[in-house]
Length: 313
Image (tube, rainbow, N blue to C red; front, side, top):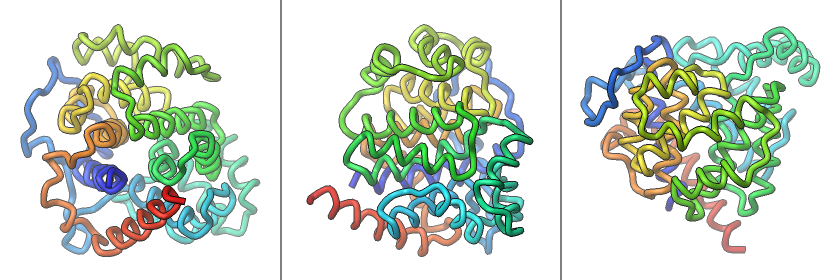
């Protein structure tokens, strides 16, 4: 099933790019065109298994929310985060916003007050909430439901309008690629048919086609290469389109751009996997060595069984 390959690709890309969360990668002079093991940056300190980051942990919490409720409620999800996310575990590398919201809720601060206080203090459009919308694009049959629930899951911790819109752009893209749009067809839709609320996102997405033959440094000059959503979602889309939907090439493109690699790589590879419906070569035989492997596969099996039944109603 396509959903299984997408979720496994998400997790494995997170695992093998985990160390990129702790280093600022230089931009490559030229595009990396061949995968090798030196590009894999994982940690095997989680009970002797391969660690994953906040991206996988929070995405799995969204899966739990969908399985139990059949929809996403921002407050319910935030409370779920407060008892399930290991924000103090350094290897997870949670964003300052998500971790601060969770801490306040654990202290007894009402969710809505916690979110407002944290976002007024930091006001950063980071991309952590963007990535965790992945299972939402798989779960719902209707695009409007995908967009509504993507916004709700983002609002559990984030209020910045760029983070909210980026979450919807990513889930919109993933849903449409799962349902048959090619990389270049998606680009045409994003350029010509979407009305953007955030100018910084619109400008970067609408210029993607003009950057496809440029070198990494030229792309970064225009799109940036950080973890803020107005950079990470355009660069992820760029790598998906430039790779023509090849998961391995999408990963290599993401690394070539340097900066904050992991979030970009996960989104680009996930989109490419949705298009190709094949497991990327670089994830072969890795999943069984990931921490909590048995729990993760059980969660995903249960989730996909529910999705299968819903989609056949």
